[in-house]
Image 1 (cartoon, rainbow, N blue to C red):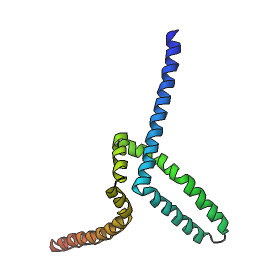
Image 2: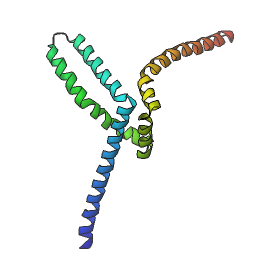
Image 3: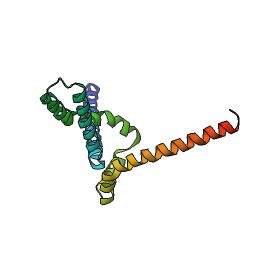
Image 4: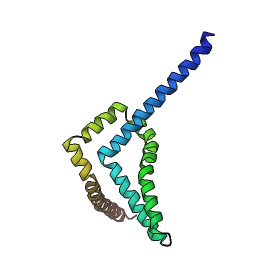
Length: 147
C-alpha cells in the first residue's frame, strides 16, 4: 500500500522538478538572447522577412503585414528560444549560462553585444577574401603539379 502512494508522489515531484528546471533554463536562454543582442538580431530578421514577403505579395494589404509582423515579433522569439533550449542544454550548464549572462551585463559584454553584428559582417568579408586566397593557392599548386 505504501508503494502505491509513494510512487505517484515521487513521480509528481519528479515532474514538477523537471518542469521547474526546464523553465529556469528556458528563462536563462531567453535572458542570454536579450543580453547578447541576439533577440534584437532575430527581431531584425523577422522585420526583414516581413518586408520580403510584402514585396513578393504586394496584392496583400499593408494592414495584414503590420499585423503579421507584430504577431511574429511577439511570439516567434519565444518559439525560437524553446527550439534552442535543447541545443544550449546539450552544451552549457545552467551555471555556464548564468556566467555568460553576467558577462553580457558588464560594460565589455554590452559593447561586444552592440558590436557583434558589425564584427560579424566584417569578419565574413575578411573570410571571403581569405577563402579566395586559399582557393587560389590550391589551384596554383594543382597546376604546378600538373593536375
